Image 1 (cartoon, rainbow, N blue to C red):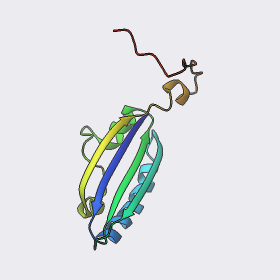
Image 2 (tube, rainbow, N blue to C red):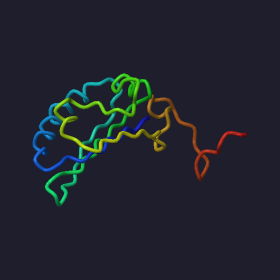
Image 3 (cartoon, one colour):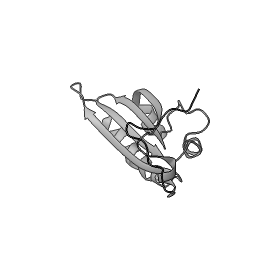
Length: 121
């Protein structure tokens, strides 16, 4: 599984426009093949803006590329959201809490206590 995290700051005066655009974008994202989980969260800031986190969980790298395109560092936002967000960053992580075998319904091997051993060098 691949976790894709987008963070951004939205300035005061642009919050309503950004949030409206994201309410249009989330249903589009939820229709994408390979998307497992999606969460949009915000933290209001003292200046009247907000910090936003878009947390995406994808089944595999191919699903992420199908959604995001060849340059994974670029956000995939509707123009109205992209225009109103500042300091947008996108990062990717490999999820370690689930094994690929478990994801695709195959029985997982029991891991030794303390986790998996690294492969021999």
